[in-house]
Every structure is written in C-alpha cells, then in structure tokens.
Image (tube, rainbow, N blue to C red; front, side, top):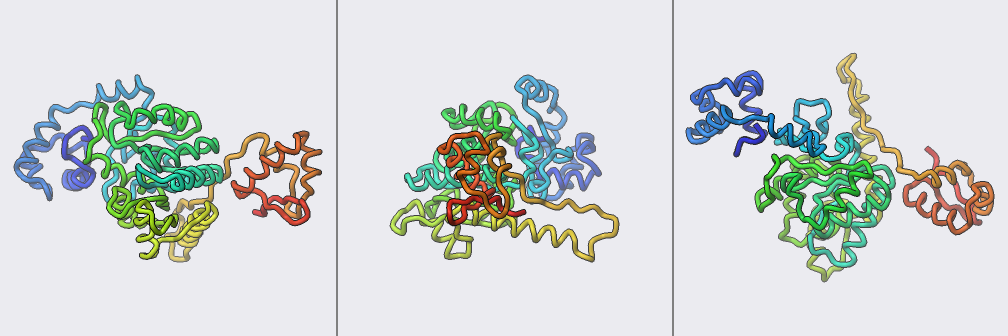
Length: 369
C-alpha cells in the first residue's frame, strides 16, 4: 500500500474501517473502493489497478540486502507517540536502531542558512540533550539540522534523522558520513518513502510531521518568518507538541520566526536544562494522568520516564567517587587515578549532563535523585 501513489494513512484508515482490515482492501472491487469516503472515480480506478499489481517481495529483498528494517503501523516496534498523529506513515524504513524511535525525544529544527550564533546554539543543545539521555530528532538538512545531529554524535548520544526522500536517495549527500556516525552511536536514519523516491518540494514538508511526531517537544533555534521551519511548528502544534524557541539578535532575519513564536507563547529557552525541565514537566503530567483514580481497573498504562544519561566509563568512574554532600576535587583526582586536567574536563561534561553540581570551596557533589 505504501508504494501506491496517493494512498496515504488517512485513506488507508478509511479503507480498513470500510472492509474490516488492510488485507481485505486487496480483495475489494473498483466499485467497492468508490464507496470509501474521499475516493472519487479516478482514484478508485487507480487504486484498484495498482493494488492488483503491486507486490512487496522485491522491496523486502532490497531492504534485507541493505540492512534496512521495515516497520509498519501494525508492528509492535512502531513508535507509540508517532502512531497518535492524524496521519502516521504506513511504513517506516529504518537504518540503524528501531528502538531509538521510541525513546524520550526532542526535535531541534531551524533554517538551512543559520548564523554562526545559530550553528553554535544548535550544536550545543544537541550535545547537551543527547548527553542527558534524550534522543535528538531532526531532518539531516544542512544548517541547524546538521549542527544538532553533530552535537548529539559528539556527546556519543542517540540522534534520529528523518529524510525527505528514500534511504537510498540520501540528501544532502555531504551528510552521508554524519548519517553513518549517527547509526554507529545507536541512532537511526528513517524514511517513509519506498526505495528510489527522490526528495522534492512535496516530500520535505511531509517528513516534518514525522520529526515532530516522534517527539514531545520541538525546539526552534533559528528560523526566518516565511520558512519551512514555521510550517513544522504548525504541524507540531496540531500534534499537541510543546514548542520552545531560542532568542536571537533583534536585527537578525534568521531569528524573526523565533521571536514571533516567543511573542505567541512559546517557551523561551537559553540552556538545555530549560528544555529538560519542560519535557520532565510533561512526563510528570503523563504520570499523574496514568495514576488517575478513574483509570480502568487492571489496565496497564505505559508511563514515560526521564531517560538515563549517556556516560563514558571515565565519567562513571569519576561519578562513583562522589556523594550528594560534596567531595573536594583534589580528592576526586587522587581516588580516580586520573590527572587533574582530565578530571576537570570530565566534571564539566558531567555538569552539562546534569549529573553533578559544583559547590563553594572547590567541592563537587552528585545530584540527588
């Protein structure tokens, strides 16, 4: 069905409701298809003809050869959050870890032509959020997307890219190395398009609904007023996602979209801690909802939890020397067996990942649970 031109998720849902299942659609006549809401005579004829001829065998064989997994919306591995949007993709082509799509995530989006300030912000947020254990989602485009993915990879964290074309038509080609690095770090590169589908002006706006659909929050770093990023924000709001924005220079065209969003009520953020606070407030709200007294008896309700931070062996070794009351840095250096410069660098990283806090008098403490 995913290979039939013009047959999207909403139409597929209507077909399944009409005929009892997706499989039953293939047995329907042209006149049966005409009775489905939203399908006119031309579409009914096209769908009937295509459904009779279309096969999945060759697509599955190509996927197996390329190491790509195909996840349909009836599979257990389909991302739960994405399934809730109005038009979830019928199929996800996934290169990398399918599990990366179902972790607590935040989308970092913005212009393809960022300023130096925008690039630095996107990379820093990507690094800090991935380091804190969140999946960073974006579109692998040049500019803000590239910087966000790069920051996450530098933190050895998980990041997911949603393409505007097929996996074998990766665009832009100069990000092929970055895509490989993302997969090596436990992330994924994803597309809803069959092999061979080149990206175009139609496909990019379509993929944006997946970027926001995988996440509970969307962070806009830099965006002109009339840009694709602002379209993505509209889709995120339709999906009931929280929107955050980074302020920029008041005379910078690249920040005008962010400032408009802030005037309209988006959360102003200047540090990853504020993004994490926003996401954890959402998670707490989900937990309260799941524990509500009116919940159905005996029903198991999945509860989102804050993710665990991504820590290196050295970071874990330093963290093991700390307690919540604080330890002198000199003592950490002695007990860890590392030189002072290395310990200080690791402590900075642990601060960014919200694992430690610096106390007066040259002491450092583990953050309490």
